[in-house]
Length: 235
Image (cartoon, rainbow, N blue to C red; front, side, top):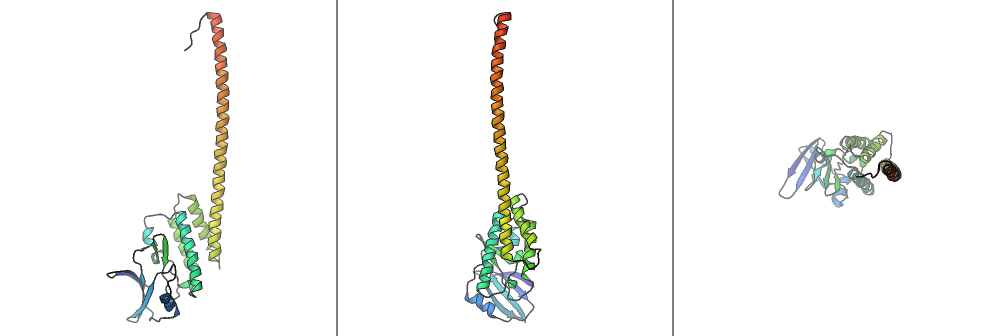
């Protein structure tokens, strides 16, 4: 499959070209007649015995381009997953095929907090395998300095290694596991902080006691010196 970009006076297009002869089925008609949330608008045509699909991407940038020099934060990954689950619901409502959603980072586009996917009405690879590959990408691009982000990405990737997994279920489980682990870590941090505060208070009390004893001892010692050697000049 070949891809390229094309611009006209008003719009920018991402073009996918396949070797198969173009045939317009109910899927293309469904997408033409409906604005499906999460899918890029697409038109198809046959050129020189090949199929060409034109996706309108004005103002959008591919996920691959975004994260070439950036890392994925947990909040952004969660945002992506929520939108992706919504897309799957839309696909089901419009009787489309999940195996036709392209999940490679170069085929996923982003604009102002929203993700958009290419729908190619020719089944290529099994959906679960594609999503598994996408989670590998998440693991490689996640912010490895953010513990919560790492947990979410790895939990998700691990779950996709199971056969015949339910995507909705593993996403919910991965997000829940991340929240649970984060809560546990925060509780441990709070417990540590409480212990440290208690320790500091105890040290402060001990310090006050020692200081009082020192003052009392110094006072008595001063009196003894006065009695023995006369007046004792204290600093």
